[in-house]
Image (cartoon, rainbow, N blue to C red; front, side, top):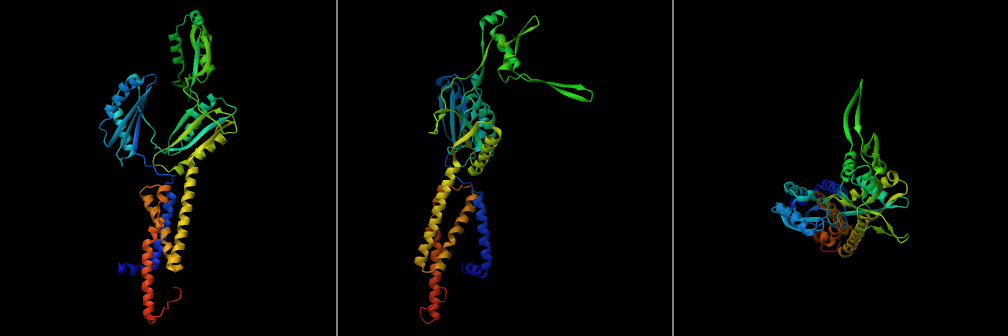
Length: 433
């Protein structure tokens, strides 16, 4: 230890350079840290979700949940498995041991699910890879010029696909809106008049709602791609479907019934009010963060996507209005932690000056605080520990400077003893002590 201290004193410029490099690397590690409001302490969990519309809870339990549980039993690393069966829905939650990789665990589940054959054409699937604190952004769609049906279509086919392009997004969950249906109310008298049955009309609609390829048609040095476009886009396309031909005269679908827009039966609605306007019905989206991603960087991408949607993509009169943004909470947390750290450093320096009796010694001890923090950031970056209210707010400056204070007191004491011996016992110290 004596040789190490002597070498440090003799090579002081080398030590200074090393500390500067350590500080720069610590600052770089801070810029790369995942900044979060609070830590994610959730277990490694996956959920198997199976939807079987119309099936009672008891049948879901017997025919869906139990076969899946038997197939999933004995998964490597599984800690506990629990299930819940409700009307038309089966949910099986699997908790794995700590330290198991999420993707490895989900792959083991997929392997077991591929061997299960369920009735009613049920297809089990896994929930998005997120965590209980994964809800980082919520928004509603506002418009005074578009109907709820149009807002729902914009949400499903424009807004959600654009937001899911942001790297680090696990899923965007939709709440509210309606599921559009094309409905045909057939007239029994017209069916009898044209000698048509319900099965014939249904089969004709199914066959005419497809697009198909027709190879290529050569024309000299050119070739034309043949396509048969039959996808129904609106009620006009649906009404022009030919269901029968009478003496060379086509009978269209709108000749045998009334066409209109409808929707699936609704079990609830999403409403909101901002206390300035009356109650309104809208569509909500919940952005889920992929587990292990940096929420600050992901939210920057979400903000850019929302700005692009509001300013360039969405039609006039339609706006995305966020009402929950994790960025605000992260900024508040960082402000609180920054104030706490700054006040702690200032108070420690004042106390050191008072009790050590030397401002130079107090500053020398205080230097250990920022360097200790920078070294902590390096270790947090290497071990993938995010910066949050718990990991930064628990820093104790007293513990950090304890060792430096003891060393400085010992150095000052020995220095003063040496000065006394050199001056014959007089309290005379070199200038600047």
